[in-house]
Image (cartoon, rainbow, N blue to C red; front, side, top):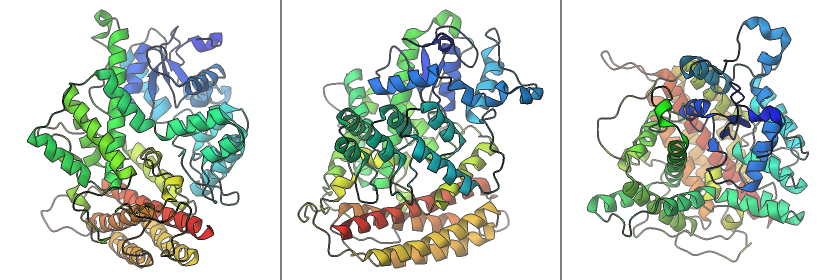
Length: 562
């Protein structure tokens, strides 16, 4: 690996010849620091071995470029600034112990972002994030990776939809042929299948500009989840026959019964578990066990992600209890059902009604994972992390309702090209490119979306100001606005994309009502309400509603233009 001399050191503690990298941080790390990074979770640090892991060439080149050009200085800005040395905080020495000295420093550096550059004025976080995202939108056409990483570290959004230009940063990078910028954006959550204002994806931009290699790489990124799960199966060589027990059959039926949102979340969680198991395998083959057993921490299950609900975190950790055969069975079931959903095939007795009273509680990760009741309590997370997570979601919702489809939605094949096919769940549909005459006019959809967004903003203000007694009336307004918006569309839309968005809109509004009712004054003797967790759940529901509304606007606009 040809890197500059100063990059041949583990940047947190200056040990020679690091064997690992944190992809999203753009730094190289040694075995000791790797154990800490892995314990942080993939939402903080995406860890990969430099030599024993499989690498797409462009992704490896992106990491090498960032490491060689001093990306570490982004995460240690205040430590390198002579004017701020008075704080007394210093980097650990190589001789320091992993716990607590090095681990505390690494957590402060990457989880708390204690040393990154702080902007001078952050009175309006929404405006600041939007400005940073616009700078990112402009910068990705150049080759300055470290500039874009710095903007992302300050809060720029990789999926930002530019209101004037009608594109995301990934569209710009694809058109300019900046494959390393595209890799960085995808690592930070950019959607390779996100449509621009005219329904064109970054792949379309790359092909039109003649960047065929980049276009093919974006297709790989779009299907990374299912491709990696399949590769994991081949690498572990599961048994010739799958577990066909009654329990396995029942679990498969429950998997098929999950709505698209919950299925996507489960698939993402399994993807993270695959990453954890692969890194475990590499870790075990590269360590001197006689010297590592006593000090370096293991990562026996997926670390808690404070942005997820307690139920989801619990389900994620249960995945570690699956043996190789059980885990292989789950992965194959997911791949099979992903194909079914992608092709729009329904079950033998599909649910037809788009009922706003959908009971989302029956679809629980515990129904897919083990149902044992001996789970250990989840690790308590730092309050600052949760608050920062909530503020980030508030800022995301404030950007003109500019929420694009998630990366995983693209992985399941619901790209803008497939949405345009007009396939219904029964397999019917019109000619490719033929507009759906049953869709409402764009102006009506936008008008209803604005009302939904206005009510969401009112709820978010109440959350920010800790006015929990306002949750119920706000949720009622949102539910009413969602009902009016859903009434614009046919009961059984021809486009599968519309059907999925309406279901997400309906189920999220129902879940929001359920969560907000928990804020009502409890009876004497009832358990105390965890308002921090409740607020997090409320914001997640609001986020899903805004995302579904945005998808409906995008689809309607594109169909009416055809």
